[in-house]
Amino acid sequence: MKITKFRVKGVSDIATVKDDIQRVLRSIVIARDDGCIFRNVRNCGGEIGKAVLQADHLITRGNNATYADHRLVVCVCRSCHFWKKYNKERYDELVKTLIPKETIELWKRCDEDRFNPHKKGAYDFQLELVALKQHLAKIE
View (cartoon, rainbow, N blue to C red):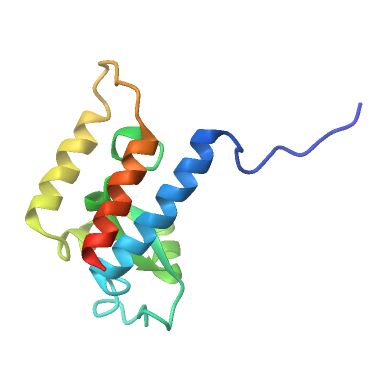
């Protein structure tokens, strides 16, 4: 029996749209946050053009309800994103000192809601992508 490798990334329509959402979210948070949100706190050098900038979801991407919500995504450099892996609690504490109060409240509500057993509806990721592109056009 031949062993084949698992596909790392899906190729379905939804997977493709989610990739597009990630690309647009990254552009939005880079423009909004003007680089890594920790650049003045951790001296990471996370400035536009000087670091690899990434979009970090404050609530896991596995939660479809918040997957495309730009308010729950922040711009971080690669080193800060890696730092989060081993320092999640400290990371979250620090993020909360750098984002607006309304975003912290939304984060808390959405985080609590993801544990509710009620059935979530289907998500139209194409519609989410269109809304994100419109938002990006506004802020650029």
